[in-house]
Length: 107
Length: 453
Image (cartoon, rainbow over all chains, first blue to last red; front, side, top):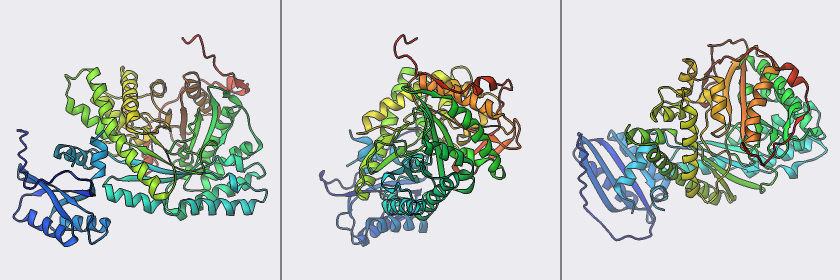
């Protein structure tokens, strides 16, 4: 196995202190995955800050970081919508508050 | 912004390696409910618990969702109930247990701990009443957990209490015989019981604790086992210890985050994070598999105690830095019925009661969830407890015994408890009896604290 990860950094904004969430999308590669997730984010008022995606062994993995301060729905509902979108498209989508990653990996 | 590699590592821990928060436990003081009138005491206990924790389950579920980390149990621990039993009859104590059970059901928590007594130096009237009531209380309630602290390093060992607990455990096994003697799975006998332990069945709200408190127990044997496997076979034990420390740090940081958030949202002070590796019967969530991934052919073989000692120490070292307050049991748990690897090792005969006893000298807790033949005499049960308790008393650590004399079952039979309590093979017990030793009763004095050899 070649552990090559070629992350395509499409957008990169400066570090700030706004509340963010991490959306992870894993599934079989198909046309329009980013478009669907981005559209769902836009509908909820989540501002996309960063997208990294790769295709490894036909599997599509995307990590999206979004700003959730201006959400037009409660965060828990946003999580539900993302997970529902995953189920509809045969993808595994999880949205989690960024703090869990910071807690675990930042001293 | 977190790095992609870190995000993927966390996601992998949660979705592939069974990382979870094992329990968010709210401790509630019941001192202000003590009354000479049984009815009003029961009413006050019910109201105090249900009002204090009315939003515990909902809040924990909210946190679970927001951070994407499963919180397996939401539980309650109360003041040792023997302190409320001074004026009660035996039946009154059973009714108090029923009240706790009703409160737990109302709140939607799966266990409520604290139906217990501290008798390391002797029995109060309330403690005697409560201990007498244990078999019926455990048989007639579903969610109540009981614990009795029979010894401490400072007080020595109350052998009268140990003799009594042997009988009580056997009686509890009999009255709950229809359900695999499950009553015994909810009853722990302790030495040096911690007052802030969030894990069942031994959780209670200690006498020095605040009015209400949130304690969190982390878990993650699967994460540690995967990290060790990834390190490969050429990795030395020093490197392995370091790796376990780093992994324990990460796991505990999540516990700290959840504990802090739960405390803030509930308006209850955060007590401690318990740095424990708590297994479940799920494949990949086993402490025995961690030991085996270190290079043991089977948990229980020669080298097991050394491997466990290193694991336990490394977990504490990594965890301590990750949390602002650490307490509870903090260490690796080895409950036989709740650990797929332990079950397999016990079934194949590689893991024996004697080896488990040795292992408890270097890890958290003690002889936990061990099924023994249903016809084991009470004196033998007391003898096993006394051995386990002495290890704790002499080594200034918590030890405990949660033995299940499975009624009607013999060596090799499987006893099924269901859910996270799992299933246990009935393990052989030596037939020679310590009856005369146990019948002497009295007190084993506290050990000397110098001349340590």
